[in-house]
Amino acid sequence: MLSRWSKTEGPDRFGVLLGAGLVLGIGSYVLYATVFRDALPKPFPVHVTGAVNRPDTVVDAGEHMIVADAIEEAGGALPIADLSALNLAAKLKPNTQLYVPEQGERPSPEQLGPYAAGYSGGDFVANGSSGSAEGSAPATAVQKVNINTASEAELDTLPGVGPATARAIIEHRNKHGGFKSVDELLLVKGIGEKKLANLKPLCTVR
Image 1 (tube, rainbow, N blue to C red):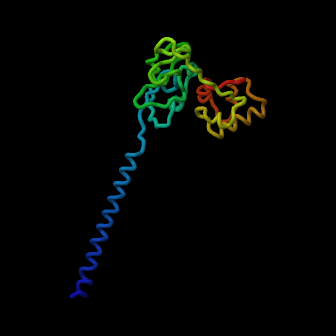
Image 2 (image 1 turned 90 degrees about the horizontal axis):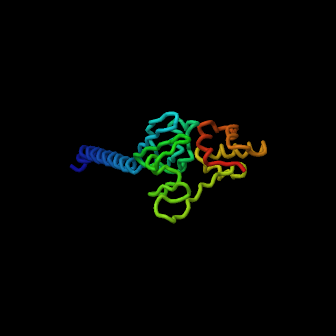
Image 3 (image 1 turned 90 degrees about the vertical axis):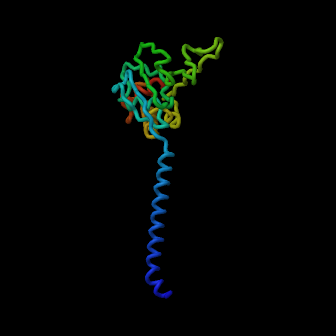
């Protein structure tokens, strides 16, 4: 009787156990994949408008994207754009509008929102003073990167400039005795008009 059970029922029991194991394994994989997928940061929309090549572009932004990245996604800034009004290094925020003003325009703090140069998490800082109480400390000016003396690491902090472009900038200035103006960055491989427009408010030559 025992021998007959092992020949007939044994394989059936093995098949049941194998099937149960497969179901359990697949279920665990699906559960893990679902949890892992939900844990990943999700992209969020940012509406880019104003003085860009493709106004009214809605960018699918990631958590590490900054203003300069969004402007690049919208085709780059127009030559008439006033990028000095914006904090190009500010992180993008979900479901917001990024407005790029034109030169000579006087946009309101509400138009520029959290992307305004001088925005400090609630108060808009302009003309060297805080927009809140009287007697506030003057705003600290953004320190520009001197492309004639900056190290590779310092250049690498600029938007759109990676290690390769930083090395190319240093090689160009060493070969030609430095830059006479920020516009000469166009002579560096990897830097075009759009990238230069983003870099000009953040760079200087001395």
